Amino acid sequence: MAEATEGNPEDGDFHLLMEYAHGFMVSQVLFTASDLGLFEALAPGPLDATAVARALGSSPRGTRLLLDACAGLGLVRAEDGGGGGPAFALTRLSRLFLLAGSPLSQRSMLRYLAGTTARCWGELGGAVREGRSQYARAVGVATREPFEAIYRSRAERLLFMRALQDTWGVYGARVLTAFDLSEFRVICDIGGGSGALAAACARLYPASSVSVFDTPDVVATARAHFRRPRGDPPIRFLGGDFFRSPLPRSDLYILARVLHDWTDADAARLLGRIGRAGGRGAALLLVEAVLTPGGRGPARALLLSLTMLLQTRGRERTEAEFRAMAAAAGFAHFQRRLTGGDLEVMLARK
Image 1 (cartoon, one colour):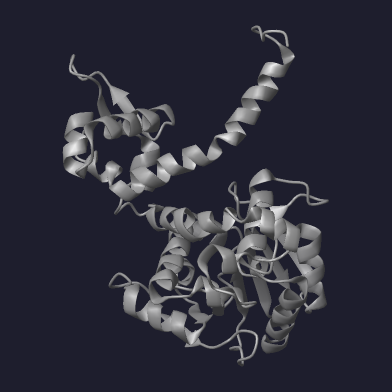
Image 2: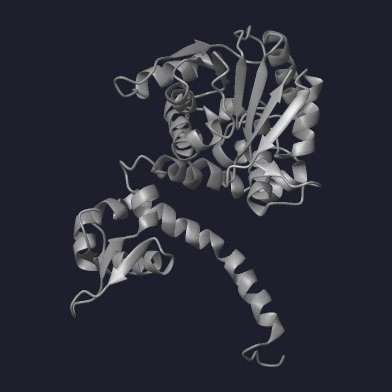
C-alpha cells in the first residue's frame, strides 16, 4: 500500500473514522474528570498538576495525563505556570456545565450516562439482533416495562430524575417560551418527574395553575429530594399511572421527552387518553428531538433513537409522525418551533 502523503483524499475519511472509533475515550475522560471532582478542584483558580493531584488524592502522573487530555478537548485550559509546568484553569464550558453548583451543571446527567446508559450501549449488538431493550444483560433486570428497570432502585430513580432536572436547567425556559402559553390557565406536565420543568413553567406563567402527574413513587421522591426555592410559585404533584389512572382536566398538557419512550401504539393510547381528559379547547405541548423528513437525521437524534431501543420501547420520530399522532387524538391544529438546540417544541390544539 502506498504511503499516505499530505493531501491524499483518503486522509479526511481516515481521520473521521478514527474520531468515531475513539469517541468512547472522550466520554471516559469527561466522565472520569467529573466523577473525581477535577473541575471543583480548579474552581478557586489555576493549579498545576501536582496541586490538583493532592486535592483529588490521585497519582501525580495519572492526574497530569488526565489534565492534558482535558486541555486537548477544551474542558480545561493550560496556562504558563512559570517554569514548573503548566497551570490548569476552567474554561467557560466547564464553569457553566461541569462545575457542581452551577445552575446549568450536567453532573447528574453525566453520572447517569456513565452508568446505566453506557452499560446498555455495550449491548448494542444484542439490541440490533433482537430489536428490544437490553436491561436484562446490562443491569440484570428482565422486564418489558422500561421504567421498572429505569427505576430499579431508589438510588437509580433519584439519579435519573436529577439527570432530567439537569436537562431542564438548560432547556426549560427555552422550550416553554417557544410559544406564548399565558392563555392556558391550567397546565399539567404529564410524566414531569422532579417538577423542574413545571417549576420553570410556573415562574414564567405565574397566573397559571401548574401540576405534575407522575407515578406515586416518583411523586414521593420529588417531594422528598427536590426542594424548591422559597418564594417560587406553587406547583402540585398528582400521583398515578398515565396509562390507567384518571388524568386531570387541564387546558394544556405538556409531554416533554415522554413519547419517545413508547411504541407507536402506546404513544397513541396515551395521546388518546389526554384528548379525552382535556376540554374542548385543550392543547398539547410536545417537547422532543425531531427527526428530519424520512428519518435520516440529525445524527444526535439518530443516536438517541438507538438509546431508546436499548433502554425503552420507543424511538425518535419525524414532525409528520407527531402531527399525525396528535391529529388522531383530536389535536388537529399543529405548529412546530425550533429552539436552536437538540429539543424542539410542537403545540397541537383541538
